Length: 281
Image (cartoon, rainbow, N blue to C red; front, side, top):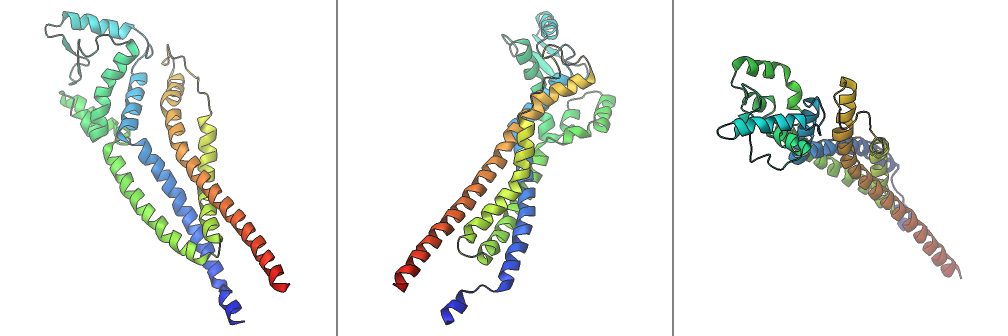
């Protein structure tokens, strides 16, 4: 009798499990979102995104239009040192050797990456540093706040937030497991993972299947709407397809833990039933 009483869980353990579980669902949901933002603001991903966005926005004839690179190559041929300043007043230069043999799209992306890198490193300040003209620099600083989004500073801040969130998740996971019973110590974390990751996995999964073809690759800038669609198709959707994997992995782990708990509990129940029959005979 004493042993049976000892095995009975205090009722408040159930309440504590639900409270910690709900808190963990919320914190874990935020953690998954922040992790996605950390992935998006990673240097390679962010610089590629900035490069494409700038190239699409500032290429009226499209990324594959040969007119611009052809004119640039003519200017390079006429330049004494085979180097030209792409925009007057902006320390944005290219040499003949740098774009030799490159296709129009490759040449554009190479040149715009020269702008994307300082923007990522220092935000609009890094971009403004390239300007020689004080008026141009002031104009950049006043109207370029959007360039402070995909930056190294943002990435580092998000990493710090993510570290704190991970610690909070672990701190909540310990009491969740403690207040659970038997295979619930496996199933409860699994349920939390499923609930926290399912909305993101569903929404991002649907978005990742979208076939964005709003603008022709040959002429994406025929209108602001088409340019926006082209940026979404080439920049945003690849990012979505990259970050949705994290949600799928979390969901798969959660489902796996729940299945282990269910089958483990089932096997344990069958084993106890057999043992009870054997003891009674």
